[in-house]
View 1 (cartoon, rainbow, N blue to C red):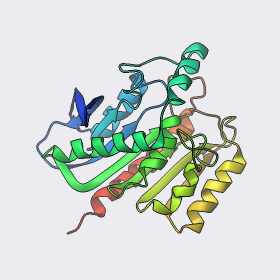
View 2 (view 1 turned 30 degrees about the vertical axis):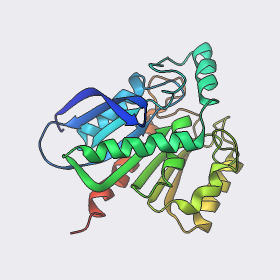
View 3 (view 1 turned 180 degrees about the horizontal axis):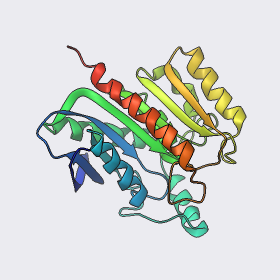
View 4 (view 1 turned 90 degrees about the vertical axis):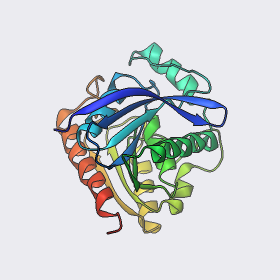
Length: 248
């Protein structure tokens, strides 16, 4: 497994300074990069762990704090009270600001000499899975893993047409992971997302597991190791194609 280093980074989006957690291989070779998008609980231990796992697989991985505007430094666990607080900050986000922060994060990655140009992906969980679907509309994002992103078929952050209406803007490959027993995402909405990806002829796969919400996170009661292991293998296959898509 690749040796890695981790550091706290700062992504500049105009006057806004976005805290970020950066993990990267220690060698001097160029690597594809992955933007890791948090749940409503902030860039907490689970998100840092995912960021480090990706770095050990040979990627430069960065997790920006998407609540920076309203709750800098926000990081909580998974209790009922903490979940309620996280939802308060989630409800204050706006799609255009989130996309702006994603663009700024991509621009930061592109300043790093050890990031392969044109080889950037995104992965997100829970609310971050919804934001990852949004981020997939950016032309720089070549591959996206969206985990149990609630509301994609029903709303968009800040209001407006549901995020699913932007599916036609997705130019890269998108893998979406859902639990069919997830109380936050009705199966009918999963069907709508898959149907729209097919209608738009998007490069995609939709993975369904007989589990609930948050099944990938080993710090949540919904964690299901078998589903999480299979999903991780699919993620590795998805991002492996980042290198294959490069010219030459």
